[in-house]
Length: 357
Ligand SMILES: Nc1ncnc2c1ncn2[C@@H]1O[C@H](COP(=O)(O)OP(=O)(O)OP(=O)(O)O)[C@@H](O)[C@H]1O
Ligand SMILES: [Mg+2]
Image 1 (tube, rainbow, N blue to C red):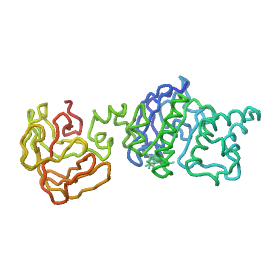
Image 2: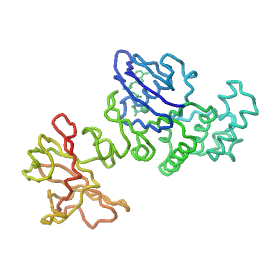
Image 3: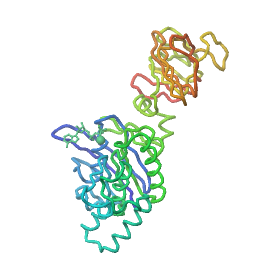
Image 4: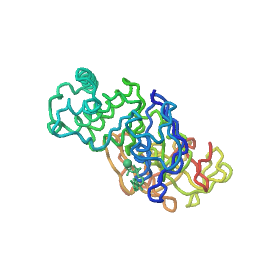
């Protein structure tokens, strides 16, 4: 239960195409995350699945049933929004059971289902409180509880944690991971948060301008982005990208430096390298293990405690972010070398597609 299939789904609002033909298979029990820039159509796609928005074209199947024209209630999905929209005058118990009450379920059964959901979400002690007497995280749990009691075929989450502070987001992220394990339910989840996407998803769908750029596991997308957009969208801080010219196995940078990277570089016009795959080295280092491939000057240093970020300006090439684990004594103004392994380099052709290694 909970298999969702989108076939050629399109949506336009007043003549403007917002969703431009989406084919997507969401398997039973999978946690699938939609990511992409603001306005790319993540919420619209989720609403199309839920039935809150009607498709202009295409088909939506849930467990093989064509639900394309069906209203939300007949799709048996539960949606959890960023704004929890709890009824302020109802208790937590009443809020959680409301949909079941409306559906005419016997009281004893509702009590049992609410108690079960409350136990899963650690809300037992709060069932008699009103929403205003709860913290943000507790309110979000009530909103999730309200979805759970309906025993939907799948859960749809639209940025459920974005109203919470950083610490609470981490806590709730773990709770959602546990909930997914426990319920084994299909979940479709929209988020802006890189860490949420990387840690929670079985499968990430990267969207841009109403189209799918790439689908894959978090590590697939991190290691093998199919194009420049995905390469820069997945990973934080984002991948450094500079212009280059690839011929044979060599890359030539804007400052004239050439580096042999021992793989096909033919046709490359851009090189990407992640901040965590770069290291600072002595500008004059020529040893293989830590050779300076480019040299530049540190523009800004950021010390985060666990990590340090060096922003290194290489004239005529670009600005690189270098992630250093732990503390670094490097300081603004230092001349430094930049080392990276050729195996960590991503190459892109003129159409911004990845050149396979
Ligand atoms: N009811 C509507 N009428 C007209 N345009 C709409 C409607 N709903 C969404 N849009 C437009 O569709 C596009 C996609 O919106 P959507 O809310 O799906 O983006 P999103 O990816 O969820 O963005 P965000 O990350 O900011 O939440 C936007 O340009 C938006 O203005
Ligand atoms: Mg949205």
